[in-house]
Image: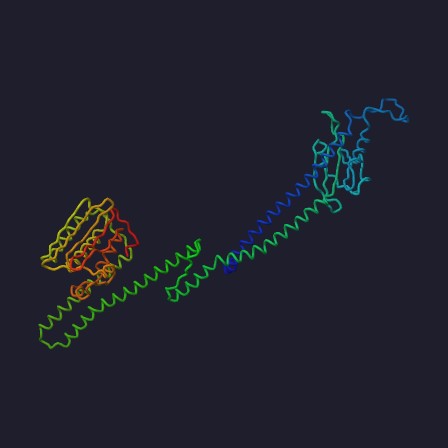
Length: 499
């Protein structure tokens, strides 16, 4: 059963649940209204009968109970007027006065036997069966009301004790008033029909409204399903495009479009990366293959040719090694591996890197400037690579004799700023937004000649971003040099914006 339910369309399931809940609420409300009306009408009728009976009893009973005849009285003599009539007379008067049309009143004793019978004045001649428990409560002095069936009709029965109006007077009889509840049944039958009709009308309207509401609400989901299928077929340009919807569905569609756009960008970047990596790997491999061909075709006994070719192959292998190393570094950064954070002094770290690169700088002037508190938390190995990459680029872009490179490490309130400035050839304006892209080279010929892979600045941006830092836009002018700045927080926080 559950499987069949889950196989139903969501639109139909929501409509069934909505309409089912609505019907249940209406049935509960109708039932409460029905039984409350029934109880109210019965209690009102009972209260009215009790009031009539109490009023009749108060007028029919004298202040003193009837006294017996004096001993030796002549029973054949005309009746003597006492201060109170006999109880049988009082009971007969009560039964007569409280009986009319379908209201029937009788007076009974403690056993339920009739003392007075008013059925001759009523159209209702059948009495309900005696309820001994109710009669016992009435003889105990309580008013009792209950409903029973008489000739197939619901009938209200009211039992009222009869007392003389004095505090210590015992119960001398019980009035039993019966009233068929035909009018109450008619009112309740009409109300029941209206409730059923209302439930049916609500069911129809609720079903139509539920289908329309679910159709309207689920239309974006059906659109998303269609878009997902087209995306699954390979078309990442598809979008849901629901800018007019500001509700949860619109937010879902907007988030879905944003996710697909990011995936599209990621796949585009990945394809471009694979293409660039293939091209970069193919170049040294082609050179090595050519060198091997030269060795195979070279005449034996020509050590000079062999030495020259082997040196060239060695350079290409070194270049290939650097390229593969940079690719592995980027792969690790893309995998968001845990940083080995430790307290470090960026100024001291920069000093180590400057000293280790002086041999590569030749006659270039290298200056380290520090200011303020330069301590922060970071991965020392990765941050060293940032300094090596930036200084390496600065060395390549400056003249060996007149070049000048300044590395500034400045402590800020919330972090540490690092700037690398050189007086090299500079970067054209159109190339500045792209220098942190993978495999991007401003001067491709010079970069390949120096063995660069085009991944150095991309690695810098990934490492800085991985530490929760920020690489600022590059400042550069042709023939006047370049400045690259980045900022690291005091406490490194890994972010997914690293890449």
